[in-house]
Length: 300
Image 1 (cartoon, one colour):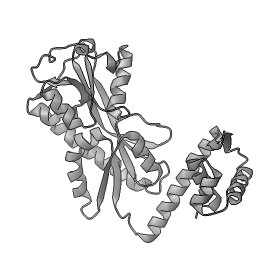
Image 2 (cartoon, rainbow, N blue to C red):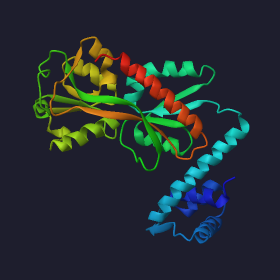
Image 3 (cartoon, rainbow, N blue to C red):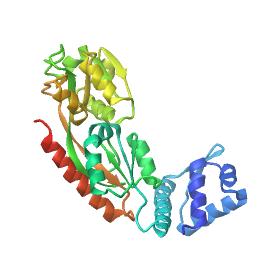
Image 4 (cartoon, rainbow, N blue to C red):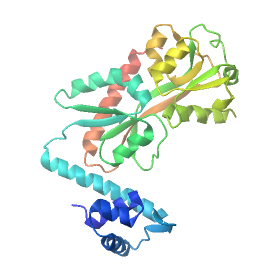
């Protein structure tokens, strides 16, 4: 069982006020201060600094917070194991590109491997998935965007092509350089999405910005973006696996850019030293195997 003062520290880090912390934990404000002083004395750390009326974590306090949060997650997992001989469900999350582009093929196969195990899939952006992973709400996350690779245990489970797309045979289909695409409307995901971050990073390498395009449409639905591109409403940049049905139908085509074309890993991400580390390694291997089958079945 996690020490009470560690739970007090975690709550104080979240609300930044001893008064609010005391109210939410149903203890007195002096008790909050006492727990904090005892914790700082025990570990020889200064965990908080005051900014105006608010307490904020010091750099060492931030490191301590991440470790304490992991301990709290493991404590919840231990309690869960004490109640259930096996985990009650397979809980995982995926970013939108993976959820819409890969899961329609992988999830039925995964369910076939675990026919008696309930599956709970959450679709969210990278930051939200990592937050749920830290809280113990998810067992693992499937992420295509950037994340702190030193903070998590991870392994790639498939490689995916990231490319420019437009209506097959349309006016943008003969562009060969990224700069030529500036004359077209640009169809992109919202800020903070993994595919948006990847595209913006590649633009920077070309000294370009999404705002340089003729018009920028920001849409938080990949199917809508792809349909707009298929109807000649602009160009987009996305993972080939997400666009595969429209590519196969001959409605979309890859823009033959000679200076743009990425292969990015889709990663299986978990907390390091998780209680479910052995099970997670098994799941990662299964997903990698299933993804290889998906890739081999894809058109060249």
